[in-house]
Image 1: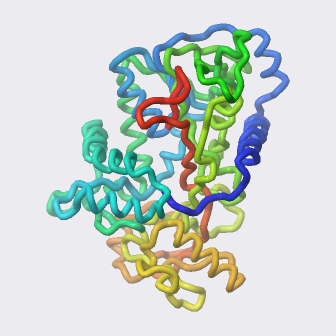
Image 2: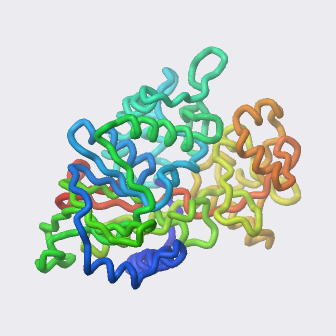
Image 3: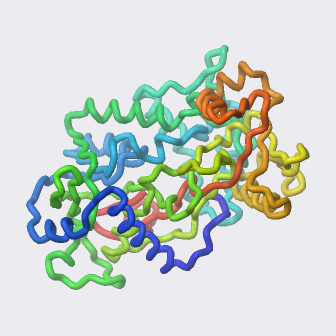
Amino acid sequence: MQKIVSNCDFALALNIQIILLVLFRQATNINVEIVNNCLNNVNLMKKVDFLVIGSGIAGLSFALKAAQYGKVLIVTKSNEDESNTKYAQGGVAVVVDESDSFEKHIEDTLIAGDGLCDEKIVEIVVKEGPQRIQEIIDYGINFDKNTSGFFDLAKEGGHSEHRVLHYKDITGYEIESVLLKQIHENKNIEILTHYFCLELITQHHLGVHVDKSSEDINCYGIYAFNTELNDVEKILASVTVMASGGAGHVYSTTTNPVIATGDGMAMVYRAKGKIRNMEFIQFHPTALYNPGEYPSFLISEAVRGFGGVLRRRNGEEFMYEYDKRGSLAPRDIVARAIDAEMKKSGDDFVYLDITMRKKEDILTHFPNIYAKCLSIGIDMTKDFIPVTPAAVSYTHLTLPTNHDMCSCRGWAGD
């Protein structure tokens, strides 16, 4: 819950998402005229207990739990493994070490949130963390361990303790691979790929008036465009879960994959659902500066947690001029500091220096980042890495809830 946000007007932000939806249809060769024609001749394809829109960690995790209670259908607009989850590098922060505590983790989170956190939710997330992490360990995830057989806990910005579990520098990819393996082994779960969700079906589609003031909106499922058959299909469900990801591609520089175009947000908005926190757009401080590459390649915060230091072009360290925690300050502070430095110097980047660590250690912890940098002529064991802030590491939009109950019947959001 970082403080750096986009300050665009709420209504403008929503309009941007809708525009992006149209642009993405065009980018993926979805013919809008074909879609409109198909909507006039829609056939019921499926009826399930649980419908999940999106195949990232949120959607996959929910599907595995819901499958204990009924049939689950996951709908995703690209390949099943194409999500923001796949590109997450650093790891998962959770209290598993005896020297750490829930109280420390809660305090760190509230400080990093700068007064904007919901304290009740922070407490729930932190205290349930060990149980949730054990669930994915039981699924088969192999977090890195040290020579003593204990978890190799990393430290990242804003944390007072080493509490980040990770798998090298491809943690998200590893978690997603394990979850998908579990999904494919579960007879109660089906995945439809290359289906582009168009509309949430509500009583509006039955001729009942629905507007923003309606308090009894029901969701019955979705209309989805099969991009391979050029056909619109209707899918009905008792529960529809929105896990469709963020909107990183509203920005010219982002580390998100090209599918992050805000479609789910636009769908909920058009269905007159209530959404909030549109302003919470997180900028990751350290994307690799490589002009012409889009999306940008992420340089994990774990590199700074491993001792990496941010420097000016002349080699001077600068983060202590902005925060007593130096390069391990929370992301919003680091991103703003880098932005300020670039504006003062006129440069398009600053440097991240991890050359003080042994090459063997760097290769062990960051093999993917090392290979990427080396591919463009940067040896991070010897050279400084040029980095610049990029949106969006996370989009923190949610559907309003009372912690355990969604505001609209028949759908939920992450």
